Length: 412
Ligand SMILES: Cc1cc2nc3c(=O)[nH]c(=O)nc-3n(C[C@H](O)[C@H](O)[C@H](O)COP(=O)(O)OP(=O)(O)OC[C@H]3O[C@@H](n4cnc5c(N)ncnc54)[C@H](O)[C@@H]3O)c2cc1C
Image (cartoon, rainbow, N blue to C red; front, side):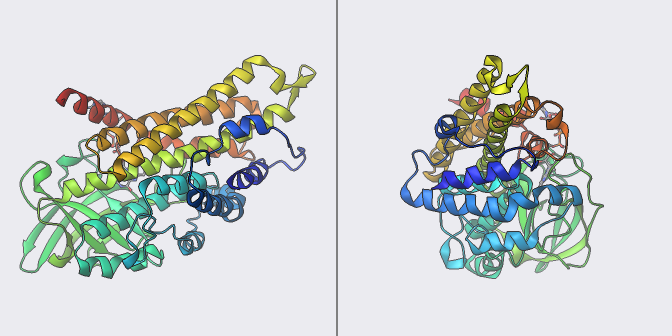
């Protein structure tokens, strides 16, 4: 059962051996059980993901964070389970699973290390973009090694001067015969410098979204270089760097889709990316609720466990309620995206907005329940809180999510 994996995980994340192992709080656990409502097959791969999170990730997440280790070998092990190209088609090495299945897997993995899982989600998004918008030749060239994670991918949209207004990007690709000459720079690129394949949005035409194309670059291309590794609040198990292009010659056959389709491709990638990043938030929040549950039961003040205090009980109930509501939003949006429904874009934006905000509140509240201990790096709760803070900022800030939802409503 998936749930057993979570209980083991709860024990592992409480990194203070002097504290007794706590058992027997199954009532609260059961009402937030992430396997509720899933098919038997979904429960199976959810269990695989929870087990992987508990055994291969959770024991190392503090060290990866502290020493800023990008755990490539662990990710390759995850890829052996099919997590390198979860929603990529099987003929090029993908697992061919649905958006909902993907969300279930990322939620489970994130309980073991949110930062690493978030990078995995970006890698999966890039692999899907090549699988979906690439030619047969491109699919077969890039996807198998991405699905096995022999090669790692980065998504390159943001620039120093264009963040929320992504369509104003200025990195230019000028066509010269069979190549494009690429010049410009990208900011905040996850995996940048340590990854092998760069999916780059660049300007091949006039201003605005219709002048943007999507090129795939490989590490080692002359003229491709990287900025210094950014120092971050969280997401420390994955590097973030600027990516710089100086007269990079990119074969025209490396363009995904037609000229001018790049912005659409970038946004379609992000619809799923938003579900994925929201799912990573769910995993972090879920782990944090477990940690808070444990702490409230173990820690005594005023002669009794903190759990006897009704104020804290109510706060815990609110956290559980927010978690379950957010999970329903995310799974509903994943289903809409899978069915290619017209409301999918707005539902993905709503789910990302709601889940990343609510889950941050949950993690922050769990930290508060730990008192001073929550602020110590010996306790995992602070890492979940630090790691998911950025989910409110990237893949479109939560202000941009509001714009997308409002635009959809006002166009009706
Ligand atoms: C750790 C990390 C990893 C990242 N990884 C990647 C990656 O792999 N690939 C990639 O392409 N990008 C990546 N990003 C970039 C990320 O997507 C951008 O930071 C984000 O889109 C916001 O852009 P910005 O930072 O330029 O903020 P700005 O656009 O300057 O916005 C600043 C603030 O103003 C708000 N704002 C802006 N315009 C409006 C408006 N019209 N109305 C209301 N509020 C507004 C924003 O919501 C935000 O709160 C990453 C960022 C971080 C921090």
